[in-house]
Image (cartoon, rainbow, N blue to C red; front, side, top):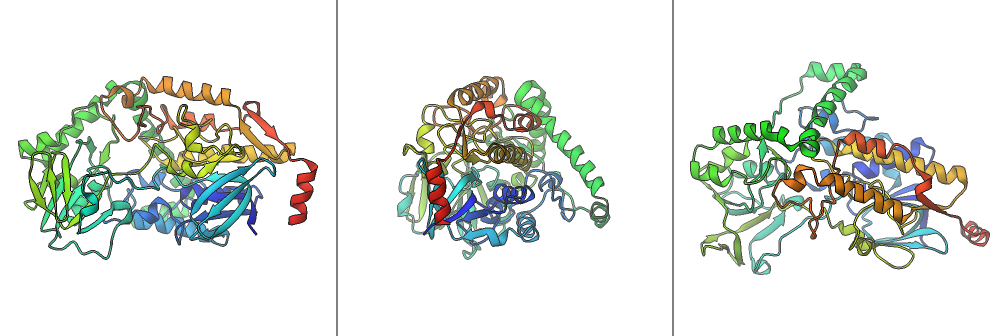
Length: 498
């Protein structure tokens, strides 16, 4: 028999844990969190590669309702962020509500009983409300390279790092030069005999102005939480100013572009290597990479930056388009995630049997980035067009949670079973998003990025300031929804089962 909870949450990263805590604050304790792994942490549990760290300042990378006064650096590392999430889950008694080792295989809306039926790798569950908190960075993306299946060495994605594999003295190939690769390449460079870094597109970078947080600062933040909140506000508004260049007037980014090029000239003396590392598109069009040690690592004698495309992977080597064959015994993919095709959508079905992914083929998007027409009582955290290129996603998660909680209050106060956004308001909302997207650097910058889907639409990012998304999700708007109410017969049936 399926275990039932009023609210089922998929995932235990920032989204899932934040949802569980805020629900408990509202008096909603009949909650279960379904997690495929054996602990909480989400992205920060899975990405344990050497050098893993956040590229958003630490002051912004905690819940506003559970600030962390103990960050050791201004940009926090993966172990510290994971420890923060684990401590948050313990302190707020979330662990007992978690079901670990339960990978969500299918979620299906039952239109007769008006509840979600969730099948996991270890059992079945039902819930009145389903919150998807798995996030867009949960499914690694590995390119379909010719001959990859023939490779006889060790191969893995950065998000599934093989810590048992010793890289000392190995010929290592790294595919990708994005946000993850720039962090782990400098860490593995001293170990490898030879390190080939395969770059498809050069990235704009900015120095990582990282520093230790002094004991005095940590003490002040611990004793005076208001001081930390003030510092957090200052950092938030400083980061928010970046959105001016990304979404309003890209010409403003010219200053950042010049700083980036000056940093490249300072760090890389070789003009040939420097030319390979110089982007040919507008600053900010692709995600700006934050690093201070990637360029120096590329100048080391055992490192080669390869810009020719990979033609073939052989059992013990990689062959590039120019015919050069390089011996390789370890292959590491720093190639990002399935961020715009939302893999979890293939597993979520509405009452008509249509998958979430299927309904997005022609018109991808969600209403206020959170709810989807045709899917009652489904709330998606970090859904379409809620991503950011300049500040913390924790802010967006908290904004969406305000909307979710207000929606659940509406259910309770009006004694309705479910809400589902009407298709017309959803279409209007997403058309406004795409109109605003046209003026952003992501649409006008002359690049191809993971922000875009296979039809060239940017369904990943919010085309404005983060506070404008908070305003859009500050309050549930019932006029944009249809409501559903269970029949008395179904209510009696479900009551008798309990």
